[in-house]
Figure 1 (cartoon, rainbow, N blue to C red):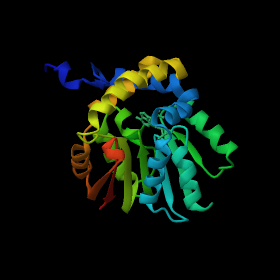
Figure 2: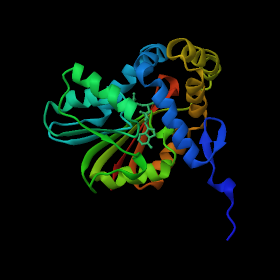
Figure 3: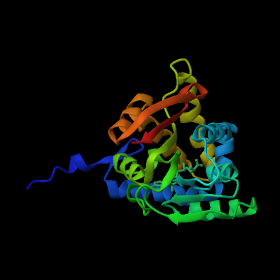
Length: 250
Ligand code: SAM
């Protein structure tokens, strides 16, 4: 049987690459930026990412005693907020494919006295958790980076318990009036900041390109529906620079 190699290609930013190459290049990006990741987030977003994350945790409506997965949890910002919401009870897991990011996150959370967390190195596409386990799975600025979004959404659906909630926080399509300014800011300034602060222009060039390649608000909502979620909805934050999607497992 003939293989059509083009069908198997995916995107790393604007470049078309094989799925294996995307996975390995995304890994290199986060290996490279891990130690400067938090500082860069504050500088690039002018602190706004903290507000976006607060909105996400409010949306999640976590109650003490629940099982919560911070998927692609990286350096643990959301894990810290979930830990506050759980008030020391329940089960909190930070899972990420990248050891460098999790290592930074674990140190940071321990420094902030957040101790009741399980850390798991895992690929979101094939989660190593039982069926029907979590009350809430959150993925923040992670879905854009996985190689296979459909597989990731299905894998999340499997580990959520019926009635459990998926929350996706991700860059999206800004409103038309904001777009020209946003384009200048992100294409001209963000890679430059990456060079100055993280000594890594390429990773931040990837960041801005990957945002452009990510499905817009309604396309992502459709993907959630197709993966089996119901009551799918989204809200735009900061004029659509970021969107907060949610859906329930049937
Ligand atoms: N959620 C954190 C936050 O909001 O600050 C970190 C977001 S960071 C932009 C993206 C994270 O996704 C990285 O830590 C990266 O290692 C992780 N990631 C990328 N592909 C993944 C995959 N297939 N499975 C799990 N994590 C993945």
